[in-house]
Image (cartoon, rainbow, N blue to C red):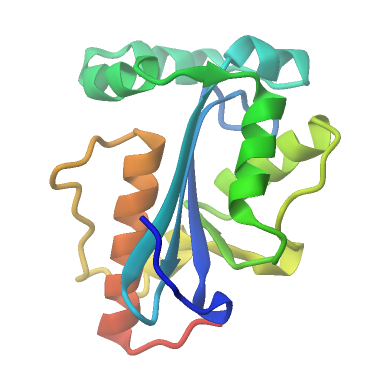
Length: 186
C-alpha cells in the first residue's frame, strides 16, 4: 500500500510479538503501519518474523509466563500466524525496519508506555544501531484509547496477536478516536 501523504501527517503504529514483557524481551515478530490520523488512512506496512535465538544472542530475555501464554490453546490463531512467517535474524529485521521507516523521525505509537517502543528501542541499541525515531516522537496508544472508551477497536478479518494485524487494528482505532474526539495530532 502506498499513497502520497505529506510527511508531517505521517505516524507509525508498531506492534511486537515477544517471548517476554520486560525492556529486553525477545522479539519474535515486528509489524508496523504508516498512517495519517488526520486522513484516517493506512498507506504502508512492514512485517517481519524474527529468529528468537538471534534475539537471545543480542541480550534478549524470555520469561516463562509469556511462553506459557503462547502455548495456551486460545492462542492457536496467533501461533499459526507467527509460525507462518519467514524469520530473519534480529539485526537484519531491525535494519529492514529502519530502511522501511526512512530517515525522517516520525511519531511512533506503541501499545503501552513501557512496551513496544521501549523494547524496539532497546533491541536497536543491543544490535548496535540507532533507533529510527527520536525519543520525543514516542506515543502511547494505550493512553489515548482511554480517552474514548466508547470508540471500540475491531479485529474483523484480522488475527489478534499477529504483529501486522494488531498494528493495523490499532492504527485504524486511533484514527477513529481522532475523528470522534476531533483531535489534531502533531
